[in-house]
Length: 394
Image (cartoon, rainbow, N blue to C red):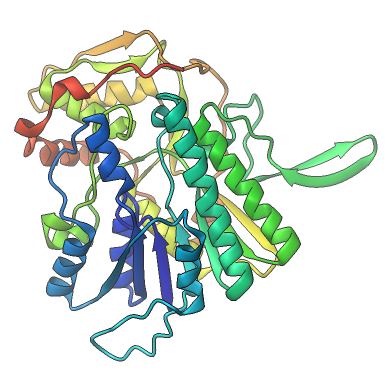
């Protein structure tokens, strides 16, 4: 089996590449270093230096004997995208795997992933829309035109749903109206340009499923935390990208860095904002099980990819408790909310589908937080406090 990972240098892309490779898949990763280049442009720093994608693949091969093929390029170029499905890109594997070069599964991570970035200014909003929608459209048409049986796994976001005052189902909602019944995509109400682009992704792929019989899985993922996976334990150089700024860093990762350097935990407004979260290892499980359980042709499977829910206040209090137990003077500061969002709201999403497939959750505990503290504090001297928070408003 061959899995093609679009956005293979990213926070989730590289761990997914190692995960599939370790399981015996032929793995190809594609990236244009958007995340790295954006960090340079915005002057935000990663916690530790991460080797290039080519270097990481070489380290992985040296240590495991397994190969991850790397291609650098811009997937908004439709001809570049299509080359992966026409067989025009050739691969030289060190052993004969019977590999045809055509993917069986495509994991689509190749998107600008940040809500604050998407509203930093109109130029970054345009970048978000053009990148995210063009890549999705390009992969959809390439699969339709050349390899219609390929399974597309797209990483969605729970942010597509917003915070409705009803339970959030897994992608679909049964509606009865004036005596008639039908099933529709769950109503969605994004709170950023980024999240709006993800809604459009879903709509594009739903079109491809209905019109062309594509097979698609859409994983509505909540914020992810952590940097260590089973595969990265082989060598710390294989750890994934770790941001701690407000633009690319996720909240648990940010709070731990803030706690270690004595920066008050940035709780936006009243702190009642509640979301679903999951450990990075659970992302790998979810994507792996999705690949093993593809939908039929003409079917769009949607899973809510979270393992538990927390409010911002709960995460801050947990970080403070664990940090203080380790000797850090962790303070919590409620600051003016730079975002337009409900700070207290109902939130009850369903997330049973992936558990039914066999995901074994890694829950957020004091012990797992302590482990993250121990890893981050090894890099304490590299943390730049001035990049933690700039207050991007929308």
